[in-house]
Structure formats: C-alpha cells, structure tokens
Length: 445
Image 1 (cartoon, rainbow, N blue to C red):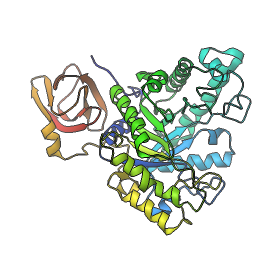
Image 2: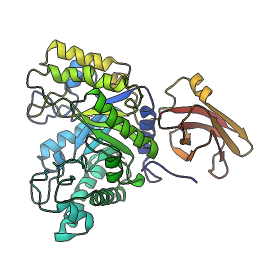
Image 3: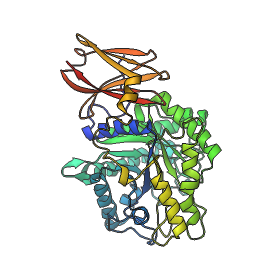
Image 4: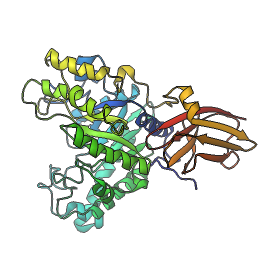
C-alpha cells in the first residue's frame, strides 16, 4: 500500500519537498546542523533587534554562520513594525544563503500580552480545542490568519515563498505556557485536538510549511504517545532540553529518535543551551564542545547523533550568551571554534544549500554494498542488506521530488514503472531505516 509519510504532499512547493528529503538525509548521516534563534537580528551586546542581517555573534567568533535560523511569530505580531522588518529581512537573507528557517510561536493569550499559563484567561486552550466557547476559537483562528499572511505575503524572495518549519504549541508537557499540561485542566486529548486544528488550518492556506512537534524534557514513551498529534500532522519531532548532561540526554533523545524511527519522522534537538552563566560567558561557550558534542557523538547506542539539527536560543543582553560573542574571552571563543570544527557539526563553512537535493552522503561503494537495483521490463527491483525493519524505499527524480515511497519488512521490494508513470531517465533510489540511509542513482530504460 502506497503511503506518504511527510506532511508535505502534492500541493507543497518543490523546494519544501526537497528540504524535507534533505532533512531525512542529514538525520541519517554522521553530522548535524547547528542553528540559533534570531542569529542575524539579535546580538549579545544589544538589548534590541538590529538591522544588519549579515552580522551574527557566531560568525564574529568562528568566521561561519549557523545554518538553521530560528524565528518567532511573537516578534512579528507583538513588536514594532521596525523590528518586524528586521526579522523578516533576516529570514529572507538566510533563505538566500540556503539555510533552514524554523519558526516557533510564543502566542500571547487572548486579551493579554502574556503567553504564560498564569497570565491567560481560564480554560483558553481547552475552549479552543473543544469548540468555540466565549469565541475563543474565533480569536485563535484570527491569530493564525495573521501568521498565514506573514508566511504567504512577507516571507517571499523573488516571487517564491520561503519553505519554513513551523513549531507551534511547543513544550506542551510543561506547566509554563497557556497550552501546557498543567494549565486549566488541559488534557493530552485537548492538546492533540488543538495541534491538529492548527495544522489543518495552516496547511489548507499555505503550501510551503513543514510542521515540528517538540515536547520538553524529560520525555518517555508515555509522554510521546499521549501528546503526539499523529503521523498526518507532524513532519519533524523535536526535544527541548537545556543544560545537557550525557546520561539523561541520551535517554530522552534515544526515546525521541526511536519514536521518530517508528513514525518515519525527522528528529531534531529543537532547543538547548546553558542558562546558568552569570559571569563572562565562558561556561555557556564551553557547553557546546564540553557537554553537547560528546553527549551526542559518544552515545554508545548511536541514537543521539540521529538528529538533523541542534538549535540554541537568542543572544541578547536581556537573554543569555548562548554562544560566545565579540567580547567573550579567548578561552570561550576557542572552545566554540573547536565545536564548530568538529566533523560532526555543520556551520555555513561546510554547508550545502538545503533547497537542492543532497543526493549521496556516503561513498558509492558503501551504497552499492547495501543496495542493489535491477530492472525487468516494467519493474524496478530493489534489494538491500543490513537495514533493520521496517524499511522505507522511495524513488525520486533528479530534482529531488519524491515519486513513490513504500514501507516493507522484507529485504527487497518491486515497483511498477507503469503504475507510477516512471519514464526512462535518471532517478534516485533511497532506502532508509530508523538508523541508516543509502541512495543509488539509476538509469531507468
């Protein structure tokens, strides 16, 4: 039975599809991408947004940019027009560099300027999820309309809508947001309904959005299953966890990566950082090379490395020095440079554009040893070895567009070229399990 696993479908733009496919490849590689929230519209020396979209503290220290830009619709809807313009131009510039753009949304509760549970009207999230009590759903959909207008009308370069990863209603298992677990008796069932409503509403009005669902640590199988909105509503699963230490991080990330594998989703470290630095920023800077990197790459199970990116929070004088900056000590700077130079970490100096297909990440010899493709009349037969079940096998054209994807528990699968209208030409065969990906370029006769 043919099944599409990504939330992107036939209405998604080609570059959105390509971005998703590339994220799957990165997730199953030996490296991950580094990202930061507002890396080119905030800097640590300032208490406000700035308009120099080519500046980042990361580049000032390392000579390279993060390749995932985090943004937040809260800063578009609840700040000044000038600041909104800074963030919009920063996103456009990042996209033009081939970087990934992801948006969270600290949505202020109705009739307040607060997104916390304590500052919200009673039962707001539950009212939206269950119906339209007090007009709360009408209010919420009107706020979504504002976000959709930004996506469709503002985040455009040369007439082309920028693909984004939207991470709404995050950290739902915490007690701090008005959509959180401990706010006004909001149940997991309510949360799933609210998330599904959000995705359905946005997806019906855009064609360039991937959706990320990200609980806060600690996570376990119960939290993951209880709050998960369902395969039809999620492309990417993330974990928000700060002040990482190896053992609990590997436990939580291992659970998330396993969950992503079962559901064939991309896993990411959606937020992390060190918030306890009250000095000159040395501890926050060293966190990356001394804590994050070994926790990920030295995980005996190999699971912690099966993420597409790791993203940290805003550098600003009212925030924390999540990465070192121009006035950090040489020790702090060098530690972060060492992190950047790891073969397992990708900054802009090692990055490829994420909007063109990443075809082969391992050597052809390795791929050929794992995947063999043969043809017989109107059939393509794919055999593979050393892949843990289940396995997803897909065929892509050279632009990266997915033609077909099927799931199997067997070590081989056959596709009909007539059924899927595969004409003679060059195609990419991708074979993926929860822990491994291989690709082969083939000429269909």
